[in-house]
Image 1 (tube, rainbow, N blue to C red):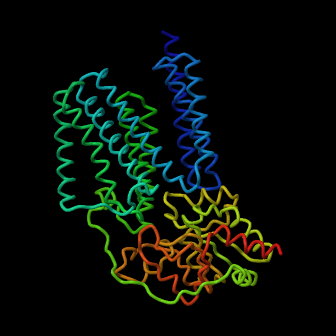
Image 2: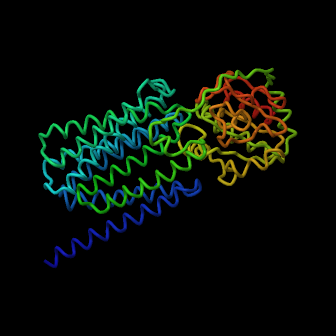
Image 3: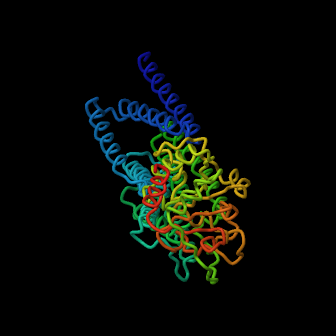
Length: 459
């Protein structure tokens, strides 16, 4: 008896330690300067939780646990090294999907071994439902982000009515299963199928410009699914960790919604009430510039603001951008990097990109802090960003972007826009910034263009 009490105490203490590490990890993940340490603390907490659970509840021998850890570590290491920065949002979407799939399978397995209490049946249904929605929703997000399917919103006549009917069918099937729980129940199969379909239906109407919001929301769903699985397994730590991920994901979703000028309810309810579509065509005279002429302007600049976007990730230009920043500072210029909350295709995409190039964290400035300084900037360099610097968000009430907070680079004395072409951004909205009197277009591959400017500084 005493030995069992000691084992239970050790297990509970281990779970408490893991939960504390999760909380500390989330806290440190809120800042780029401490994000790596936060990630490590969370990983250690998860390692403790997994090992203790496998030893106590599942009772696997040590060699099986070690073998699993080695295989998982190898897969993670290979994926982390091989994934391109442009593919990071897709990888995160797949991670969310795997979390949802795990919760679905846990709920399904519990049907065969769990008791028949109403509470247990409800938690099983929640685990299956949220897990299924997260799985297929994440796969659709992956398809849109990787452009394996159209990134634009996919809508059809009667879509809202269809979704409402789908919700009612899920509720009805869930209630029938709880009243007649059985592993062979057709209502269980119905819940699984309908949840997978619902995940598709709530993601396809969301267009490319809102994908950062979707990533944050699906991250929250994966946490809620894990929390439901924790109730199924009666595992307190899984409940706590799932709740933390779910809550932090919802907070991040709210932040992303404000940054995109979208309401949380609009995202939760499948983009009902589509955004406006502007028929106005932006016209004007484009003023190209060469890398050599751009160097002459930068050489005389005292304040430079760099605004990175997804195009910088595509060009893999982060390292030469850091090199350019170093040369500008050596020339007596103050350099800042303006980070829009939804720049790129997932939350924090640009922070991760610049951290990879070892850009000092104190040079990263949030949108609200950089905008009051923009009128005093000698040069604003826009690298692959589009929607997040589109002045139509402030000026054109007919634009789908109207009301979205943007970085006001058009207020700088000179604006360099590095792009391959005049194509619109991920939202498909034309950008009047390209035709501004103070804008100069530096066409071509961003990495090559900046390398040319860096070469001029070295010369």
